[in-house]
Every structure is written in structure tokens, then in C-alpha cells.
Amino acid sequence: KRPLIQCEYAHAMGNSVGNLQDYWDVIEKYDVLQGGFIWDWVDQGLKASNENGEAFYAFGGDLGGAELQNDNNFCLNGLVDPDRSAHPALYEVKKVYQYVKFTSEDPKSGKISLKNMYDFTNLSEYNFSWRLLENGVEVGKGKIADVDIAPNQTKEVQIELPELANATSEYHLNVYMTTKHESALIPEHYLLAYEQFQLTDFKPSVFKENIDGLKLTKKEDIITVTGDGFKIGFNSKDGTLSSIDYGQGNLLQKGPAVNFWRAPNDNDYGYNMPKLLKPWKDATDTQNLLRLEVNSNEGKKIIDAVKLTANPFKIRNDFKLNATYGLPSVNGEVKVTYTINAKGEILVSTQLTGIKGDLPILPRFGNNLIIDNNYDQVAWYGRGKHENYQDRNTSALVGVYDAKVSELYYEYIRPQENGNRTDIRTLSFENKDGKGIKITAPNLFSFSAHHQLNSDFDEGMEKRQQHTFDIPTRDLININIDHSQMGVGGDNSWGNLPLEAYQIKPENLSFDYVISPIR
Image (cartoon, rainbow, N blue to C red; front, side, top):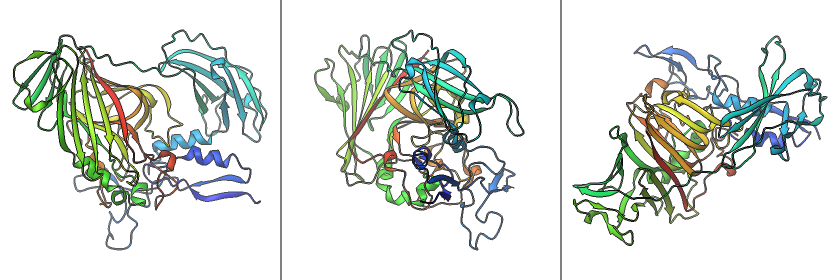
């Protein structure tokens, strides 16, 4: 019956503050709940230099006394770095905490309800505007005039939307509230609240199995599929996609491998994820090739890839290569199927089977591949621009964004999983000449890309006092294409898993994506 303010909640240590919107859905449902204090505001690292003169933030006995009691990086649990620059989670906190709520029963009609949760301020003191996006690109905008809503009141406003002209496009409506005037701490036109409404469904492109003009050869251990302007190779010893050449030479350093693991964040170490979920790390590291099969010339029967000869022959129906791997640590199998069409597009299908329900949850289910470092111009249509995860992405609006690969890495003071983006529709990697690859999928996916390997961010079974200067910059682009990755969590950093809604249950799973040339 008494009001409750939590003295500590939403522990912000490292890559954290997951499910904050879920928390506030509950807090705003009950009058007795009045909020709480996120633990805490700032990473309390001390600026220092290592023996090579590289700057870093020291913690856990770095500056002496390491043999005495210390709490490792438990002083690094803030929403901002020691220099007060924002962690990605701070954007989520701002979004969840906003004092105006935008809702709509039929956003396509342009009717939007605004709920004023200020106690003393009329919304007439702010400016309101809208933008219409078609496939992530702005195609219309306007202002919402005369918004007069008293404190703790709700009103509906009408936005005069232009016609949604293209039936095959995906449309979003963004609504914004900004300041009218400069105040002591807040500048003019500062964004205070916003929301995004999806007006039409996402319609993915369809992969077409047209293979006219393809030729198939095998020389030593390499199976090669050749078509108009492309050459794609597979290693018959391990079943991997070994080369993709769209006229610029082979852009692939390492073909797609099935990946179930992520570098533990601080919350993961709190519930002993490296031990608890270890079977999935082992399943990532140990995958034994059981079968490698290729569709025959007529497309009617499967033949053993080892029996292919060096004599080239035309493929009249379709080309599929199936590589099936045993996963001894989880007593399951995973099959990766590559289908190639006459455009040089590669449909990559991953099927996980034989998975028992008594296994631990999966940290991740996806593919990991490495491409040449020249293709470092990234563009994506999905949530951004800042890092986001399935339990921390309400602040990241769907749109079209671009960045260099190096800009996708967020340097947590203690290195860990970072840089993910969710709800991706299309993703591209291009060189300075505008050539490269595009990745699409029939369903929304997640991605991350770094000049580091996944293992570079992984300290192993226990934390080993790693710092940002321990993380190399490699001459490569390491890409994760994920069906899903579990949430980062955030209720605490000493035992709680991500909420069940953001876990990946152990079961048979599958996902597809397409690699296409950008010429």
C-alpha cells in the first residue's frame, strides 16, 4: 500500500540494461511503483597508459594492489564511460523514460494518441513533427500543429499522411517531440520523445532458382560453380564455401560456419554462462563433416561430392551442395545447404536437428564468415544506428543506416560481446568502388561486423583482466549473420539470465539468407 522506489535496479554493468521497457511496462501499470535508481551512472575506471603508451581505463588492481582484495571490473557498471560519453544502453534509458507516450489503433490512418505524463507541463510547450519512411528512406514529413494536452491527459491528433503509393514497399511513420526554446540545460530543437509505427508489412525478395548457363567442375579438393561474371568455390574436404568471385577476385577469407556462441558479457559471467552453456561453445568449435552431397546434373538424385570429376558439365536443373555436420557436444546435427542461381546469388540454408529439450539455452544461432578488409563500407536497413539487441532495441528505429566497419565496434572497458544490430532487412558490404555483397533474408535477422574475430572478445571460462588495448585490429571483416542472439540481460550481474522471452530454447531451428553480388 506504500509507494515503492527501488534503490537499485537494471544493473548497467558492461553490455547490459536489457528488458528495461518490460520493467517499465510493469512500473507504469501500478501506481504504487514509482521507479528506481539504475546501478549506476558512470563507469568508475581511472585513465591510465600501458607500457606502450596506449591509453586505457584502469580497474581491479591495474594501478597496484592487485594481490589485495578487489572486485575486478565491478566498478564499471555505468550508463556512461568515465569521460561521460554515452554507452549504447543510455539511448534505451532515454527512450523508455520519455514522458510522452505515442499509441495508435490504426497508424495507417494517421490518428495518433498522445499521453502527457508530465505533472505540471502542457504539451503545447513543445514542437511535434512526423516523417514517413518508405523502405527506410524518408518520402514525406510535416509538423503537428496545436498540440494542447494538459498534464496526465491523453488526446488524439490527426496526421495527414500522403498516399502509400507502392504496394510492395514497407512504410514506417516516425513521430517526434522536440523543445521549442533553449533552457538552462537543454538546447532548442532537442529530441525529448519519439515513436515509430509500422504501417505496412515487410515483403522480402524471393530467391529464384534459375540456373541456366552454370558449369560445375572439380579440381583436386575444390568444387567450382561458374556462371556469367562469377565463380564460386567449395572445399570438398570440409564442405565449406571457400571462394566468392564476382569479378573483383575472391572476397572471402573464410566461408560461413554455423555459430552458437557469443563472447560473454558481464551479466553472462554473473550466471556462469561459460560453464552452464558450454555445450554450445563446443558445438561451435567441433563440427564433424558427416556427408557432402551435390545435386546431380539432372537435379534428380544426390551424388557424393567426392565422386565428382574434373570434367566440366552444364547444370540443367539446379545446383545444391549439402554439407551435414555432427555436433557431438549436443548429440545433434546441422546441415548447411548452398543453392546457386544464374545471377551468382547464393542461398545459404542452415538446419539444426536432433536437439533435445533438456539441453541448455543457446547463446546464439547463426553463421559466421570473414571477408576481405577492402569491403568496409556497411549499409543496412534495420534498427540503428546505435548498437541494439532483442531485449534492448526500442530506442533503435528501423531505417537505412551506413557506417565503416570500425564504427560498429563499441569498446566496452572490459571487452565483451558488442556491436549487434537487430531486425535487419538488407545488409551490404562495399569497397571504395561500390562493389561487394548484399545479404537479404526471408525473415528479419541480426548482424554484427568487426575487424576482430569473435574469439578476440572472449576471455574464456573466467575473466582475465583484459582491456581495450588487448583487442587487435585485424586485416579482415568478421561478419555474424544471426537467426537470433539471446538478450543481454540486465536485472543483475550476479546470477540472472536474460528474461525467458529473450532466450533461445534448445530445439530444432532453421534459417535462410541470400548472398548477392553488388556490381
